[in-house]
Length: 145
Image (cartoon, rainbow, N blue to C red; front, side, top):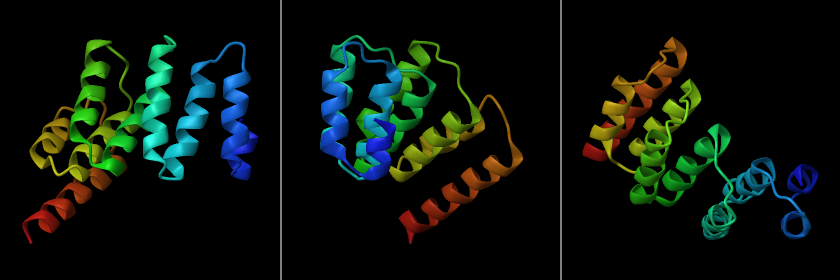
């Protein structure tokens, strides 16, 4: 599937997923990344629904992909639901996931929530924090001006 994704063969990647006797979170994530990378958000949302319907648990990588889907479609409700799932399921949060959540809230113009998430980030990394903070400030200036 990864090879099909690299070659841009979405139909072949979809067919391969459908024909797999046992689908893993990795196979689902590969197609999710493919769809989001090509801005095929309708397909990505549909695939995520199928993933859940098939009982596939989503983990760290999935939780980084999903907020990206939210900020690319400006669906704040979906992004908040994903954030709730991360908290409710007590999924381990990484720097990348925290930064993704800050970015998602900022892109969806929920600046106050982005700032709160930024301040309660569990792990601090100077370079990523600086990028997040600069992004927040730029989005705030853009939304006011």
